[in-house]
Length: 436
Image 1 (cartoon, rainbow, N blue to C red):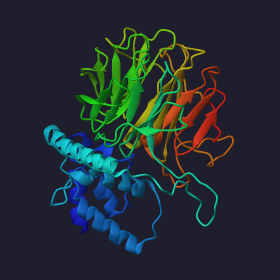
Image 2: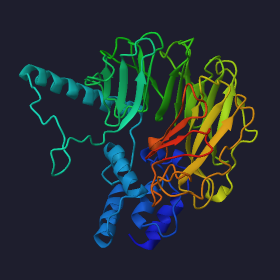
Image 3: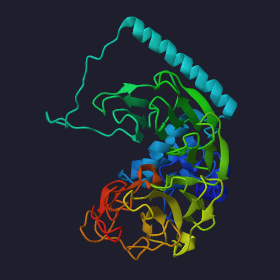
Image 4: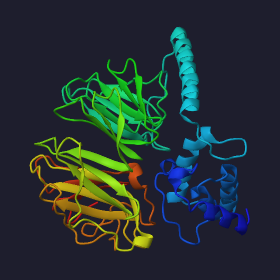
């Protein structure tokens, strides 16, 4: 591809990804691109790329350059896998509409059931290998598998469900000692959120395929409940009124008032997280995207989500709006101090930032905010340092944004935080400092 063609693609790619064929959900993170970014990378992030041309440009690039893992190479693998079934004969990404997807999923489901029937009739058993070893040794080693979500039953702690990137939903009834695939005849294609009913461990909701599914019999059978046309980030039953269920996802906040049987869009706009006040769960917090402001924002409801109020006194404002980027955020509320709210933010506040913005803290249910560290984003300290922070990225700036990111706070010590990105970082002083 010549320079003129690349420029044309870039101009076309200036339109928002929300209205394009190429969606932000296809990538682990969508970074800001410097001027000298390789052509295959620029084309990959554009709004309507020719995938075959991206493949060709990438191959030509690495024939002349040494391959090094970075944000773009990891994004390419993730993107290429997700769009594989959407590529037409011309090489363009053309996602199926809801009806076309349903026909396709039904065909896949029937095929899986046929294969399962044949396997059962032939009595296949696993003869190995059942152990993985470090290369060239006999030392057992566990390699990566992408578990996208996990939930433990509040009413029966022996029961957990785990959703994987490959599409399987697994269940354990012995606290993880053994697992069973409970989606073997379903077509979930990437389970990104799972939630167990607070008093009934057989009632489970999951997000996959841009849809919400539910089982009422512990995973034996599943029913599609809603087509949300988005990636589900969080599913949450109301702790004391499980007829209310919420789904934070990549384009809205969805709400059910009948235990997940039917759903409606409560709020538009990407919603990264939702959490409840530990003592008064009618107080709910959500973290939403402000596209124009290039930041995440906290909204609070005092009436189970009937109305929402922006809480931004003292809140984060990017220091360089042109180069700012909101990549996501997570909420955490300590049970021992229920009026404290933490929010961890990733993205860029200014040029030079590499995925980590920081933590904001409220002592009064979100009415006022402070930054315990006193800074947003860079300058970062050395990787794995003991005083300065560098939480979200490797030394070369590679990070994966919201793709692998979480925040938790100790239930007994309100000053102890854990931030999970491509490493685990701990704070013992309420987010002022971190140790990797």
